[in-house]
Image 1: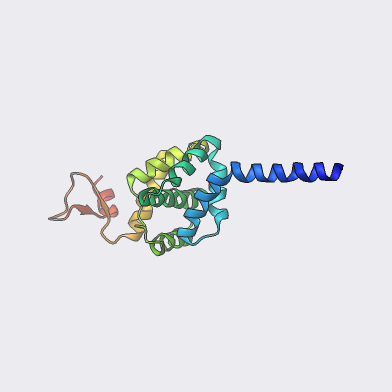
Image 2 (image 1 turned 45 degrees about the vertical axis):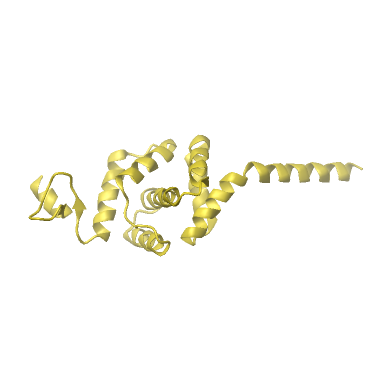
Length: 167
């Protein structure tokens, strides 16, 4: 009789856990499936975000919006390149993963601000994130970075090294 009660308690515990974590698992699986990655990479980032930010992130990914999925992939990219491994090989790998998934592989300013919000418990340095964005985007674009209000000839793009020489 005791075994039946213990088995029932275990089944109730497992079923309750599955129901409580279904939303976050679904969001992580959706993103990892799109990026063709094991879910553990997304889940490890979510677990490091903190409870409140992780809930916000999974709610953000839960909507059937392609833009939200792209922004979630950019947050994962920023997490992987800034916090996990900042090597050039890792940047190259994540550029290829985003390209293969059909997402623009460059980091926008809005995505950077979104990552700052979701990764707030880790207290990332905003200047370091902006420098990461500049370096990452400059590495993968031959045109350089776009600067507001600056022109080089008839182009609106200025190479990062040219901009640094002038400033």
